[in-house]
Each structure stands twice: as structure tokens, then as C-alpha cells.
Length: 132
Length: 88
Image 1: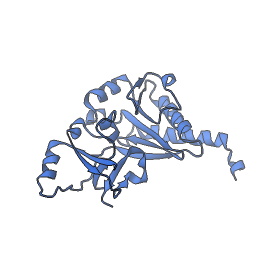
Image 2: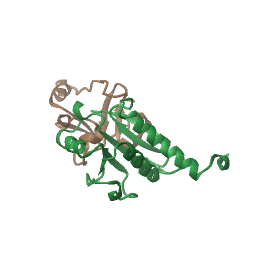
Image 3: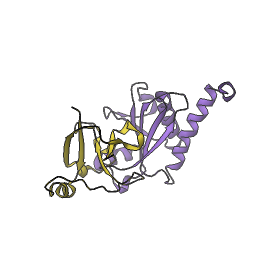
Image 4: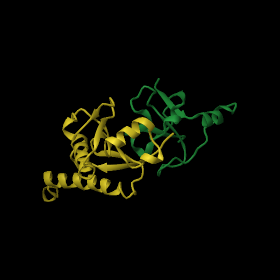
């Protein structure tokens, strides 16, 4: 009754909702045509600007519109593997990133981009020398 | 009392209820999750339920419902997905 992999990404002091926003932006750098969907209501947001940030704690991110349509019709199957990322932000210290295969060629750079983006933002806001 | 659910397909349901005392056989799910039987507190009305659980649609064909006595452990210590493995 369970599939996919859970990757825990630390928020490094940014908090869960800013970190969720940063993860979405990082994905957009790789998936330019990404489509978002609310985990709470299933409402589809076309474009980053349509997402009501601050209200969403769970976001599905699809590679593109075709990927969304495929998931809507078939749900999880081998043919749409690694075309959707499920982001959950319920803990101030971490974002959970759910993927089919974190080591897949198309997925590993996305996960790295999210981790790096959060780290880079946190070090800009909280420089290491001040933290020391 | 809170409830907890196990979703499955017909063939697995037939295995579960073929025993006089219903038995859940631990299996290894896809991904890196450990072997176990998995449960969730997400009910059937949850939007995008199959996607949240990461399962094919046919795995929602049957649902077994239990009282939650808190003897299950959250998935990898991460309660966000509301998925639990049992027993402890």
C-alpha cells in the first residue's frame, strides 16, 4: 500500500513555507513547463504565480501538462515514472520530497537543485560567520 | 477514536480475509521503504489519495478500517505523509 521514495530536505532555518516556495522555483529551473496542483484541494495552478503561497502545505508538481493529464487518467504506473514530484511542508525544519526514483537521470538533478537552493538562500539570510 | 486504513486490491484482499484471523503479510514496497504492512490515516475522501500514497488506482479497490491504537510507526520518522508501518 505504499510506493515512491521520500527524500527529507532540511530547511536550514528558512522555515517550511519559504522552503516549499524555493523547492518549487528550483523545480521550475529544470521543468520550465511545470504544472502545480494543491494537495489539499486538487486545484490545478498553471504557472508559479498562480499558487497561493502561505496557504499550501502540500503541492504536486508535474513535469508539464501532459504529465498531469497522464496522472489524472492513470495514476501511478511505469509509463509516468519520474514525471511528478510531491512536496510536503508540515515541519519547520524539513520539506519532504516524494519521487519515484531519486537516482533517476531526470530526478537526481532536481533534488540536488532543491537542496542547493535552500542552502544558498539560508546562507544569504544567515551568513555562516554570524552563526558561528 | 481515530481510525486507520489499509488500501489494497482484490487479490491482496482475498489473501487477507482468507485467514480466520485476518493476517497482513509484510512485503517490500517499491522504493527504499522497509518490508512491512503499511497503513494510513488518510480516509477515502482524501483528494488525490492514490497519488499521496504512491499507489496505482486499483490498490484503492478495497479498504480495511481499524481503530488506531498508536502501535504503528510513522514512515521513516516522517509523519507528513501520514503513512505508518506496523507492527513496531
